[in-house]
Image 1 (cartoon, helix red, strand yellow):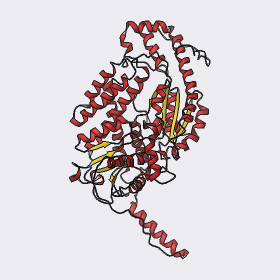
Image 2 (cartoon, one colour):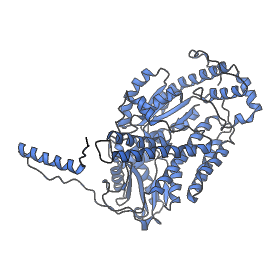
Image 3 (tube, one colour):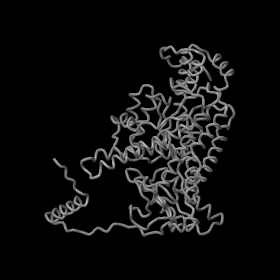
Image 4 (cartoon, helix red, strand yellow):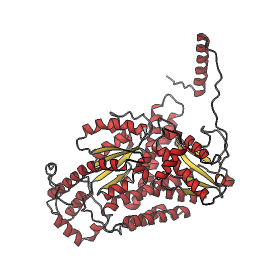
Length: 537
């Protein structure tokens, strides 16, 4: 039997006809609806590209710097905004609407703060010389209202004609809230070259940041990792601006990272940071400087790559398209295109991982995350990170990726708060889980960190017990391992390959050294709580 498809225009026409019948039957007169249309603003044109600077921001410092460099390599004038601070949040609250979520106040206030600083420094024609580029979306999240908040705050702050360009996650660039409406913005060309340049910048940033997170807790010389990270940003920036080989640049960065001396016998519990996208990504006051603070408290941070979000968007589109086969015309063709995009993206990601000899993890399987979360959270619910928060919790525990999971979200984040209700059920079924949700609000930092410290104590106990178990299973002592490391300097370099027998870096390092010593692992019973607390400090 041949399938028949009904076009969207036909559906709309039938719906309107049925509405007219109902109105006539019920005696309800028809009325013309005049929807609000924002006044058309000036476009960003190609002629302005040489003199207009594109402002943007919102990711980590590394991501913002490298995305800016990639755009400069394509001929644009760009400038990443500073990391948002509490002063920016205060301006966001002053000029924005009430009842918005934390990221709105921080990001909107950050733009206003920067423009006010330009004006105070004597800059003129700010509305003509600068535009702002940000992402837009639609769904059960205030993220979709950022655009109107930017425009309101800019008007209130004295920049009524400042242009805000919206890059839709679902595709396209528009400035008037409706895809395809308004003037043509040929000043920013969203072609294949643009997408590939930005994608390469995101992947490179993910890889470099991940290596820095892994090395920093174990560096012998304080600040050595940050020095290499700073050099890596500059080196990659020049690579993008001059169109050089990114793979070779990452290879050189690997060599620089490997010059750092490390002590992998330090007991550091791994803490997985998940939660709302902006809160887990920002490195300033908006997250209470959580990543740096955890390192100072004696933990190893496991941060989620930005690339996971891109993979999630592609996978979600693929899943929805797969379900629309037989309903929408062209669904099979679109499904094939999305499948190719997914395969190409992961291949792209792994290609650049190879430059650092695969010392960073591959992207987590979106199918696996959906399977883990499916019984607890509907994978078709959008907004925020969707089901990924629940799936990542399972993945971190079941795949021995972290001793502790911290879910950070800003106040007012509806989707992320919703997933917290589900996490209580997940914790009850994951016996080994150490989980804590925290909410950032710009204040109450001491209270939040105090709660995290209590859970971090549990994670440290688990890490010590795990190290003792590794020593027992391989039949070695800390002194024997330390003596072997002194005789073999390669084990004091961060690029040494470690197995994944345990969660923590220290026990996996013991396993690597013990195997080099010719020892074999013999399984032992799990130690009771507290029995291995004296293994190391």
